[in-house]
Amino acid sequence: MKQFFQTMFASTLGVLIATGILVLGSVFFLMGVAATAGGGSSEYKPDKNTVFKLSLDGTLVEQATDNPFAELMGESNTQLAIPEVIKAIRVAKDNAHIKGIYMEAGALHGGFAGIEAIRRALVDFKESGKFIVSYGDSYTQGAYYLCSVADSLFLNPQGSVGLVGLASQGLFYTGLAEKLGVEHYIFKVGTYKSAVEPFFLKKFSDANREQLTSFLESIWGNLTSAIKESRHLADGELERYLNEGLALGQTTNAIDCHLADALRYRYEAENSVKRMAGQDMDDKLKTADVKKIVSIKQKEKKSDNKIAVLYAEGTIIDEASSSSPLSGDAAVITEEMAKKLRKLQEDEDVKAVVFRVNSPGGSAYVSEQIWKGVVDLKAEKPVVVSMGDYAASGGYYISCAADKIVAERTTLTGSIGVFGVFRNFAGTFEKVGLTTDIVKTNTYADLGDFSRPMREDEKALIQHSVEQTYDLFLTRCADGRGMAKADIDSIGQGRVWTGEQALERGLVDELGGLDTAIKVAAELAGLSDYKVTVSDAPKDFLTKFMEKQLDEAKVSIAKSVMGQKEFELFSKIRQAETEEGILARMPFDEVGF
Image: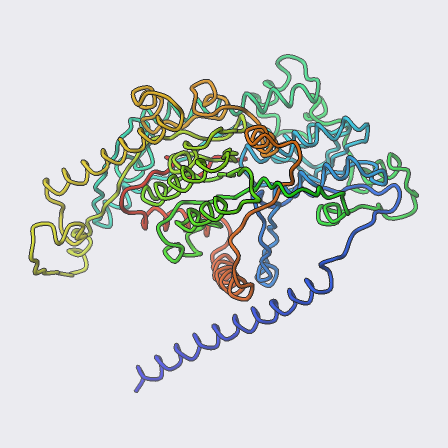
């Protein structure tokens, strides 16, 4: 009877929670419909002497998605869409009522390439003669890299400029697996393909340490050179700040090393902005955020010729349903991407396609299907790949067939290599007293059975399969880039390169951002008159809404219970423990500011 009531209580609680989520989802859906109906045609018209306020707080993404559950769960982290931020900067540059930009530094998270693209837009904005002022209670490295372009850079008297350098930390599961009785079987091709190292090593291999050092130094060199140029720093000034740990000392260290112009409290910085914009000093600072600025009506190009931008962001997986929202992947790429490419192939109004890839890779099988979609599309119209923060391993696989590849200097790409991970839980079963038995009809009917050690003949079969996949990967890259397989192999072997290094080795054609890729696509298509559209697969709004928000609700609840840092660690472990099969994936999870 006691068990009955426990079961009934658990079931009832589950129903109530699910019902609550559905009700909340429905409410937000109706609110969204109302907002769309009432505000879809709204246009922001700035008053004279308005200032564009760019809040550098949140996570940089290619395409932002609103999460109405975040605020309910106490989450403050927002998403900043890189193309939207860049558009806002350009609109502000051309609008006579916008007098300048006021950047407020916060907890900015993102990859190097996205931040580089925004910084380039800010440098271009300064050509208008309008001002850029920044203020920060404290500056993270990414925020400071952006704010270093400012005409005036203010720092709170109790704040800091957190420039300390870059580091990549690995998380190794070998010791944990030993304690749990888990045995990992590793299959790979590529000296530098180190994604599997956490499962059989307890520290970085020499090859991995070499590649990490190489691209970290390349990225950091580009960043520090830009900072030195913008801040007009003397030789050795920034190095002293970094190597003497002055970021952890007195706030005045930033002034002494000319990294900041003055110490100001927030209201004092805002008063300076008011004066520069010609606003009344007694009034509140008059600003407009990104969403308002991008809503300012612009002249639309009228043309039947379209250049379509198709976004491919996230880990490449076999099925969308196989990615739990708790795995930490905000976005995933599935075989559905190949269908989107075919749809663009059939659209006669689309004269060229820019394939925006921001992916560390994943499933080798799905990567091949998307590669085929690019090849077929390329036969009909020009295809140009624009690389974001990452286009590595499977991300490079789906890019290599394009007519041209454009990458940022700090894009992480290459990683041409393949690996497979399989697990044996026999030791774990023994610890807890579990036993298994099996009946089979053929020799390999139980291949992959995790309750027993793997036989040598099984290992040989899987290794051969991995080598075949790598050979195919080399072939795809060689054909796409017009290079010999041996040459691709020499720069492959799983090694990660920055965009700058990849250009020197023939893996990309040009350095630049999305705009550069669009211009290249127009040239290849012979277009002088065209408009740019964003391509996405149509989906029933209610279905899309409910699918997205239920997943967001699960993530929000998990973060609320665990805490942000604990959730991120849990996500990495969960992803590592659920990855099986043959993968083309970057050899580490993330390197960022």
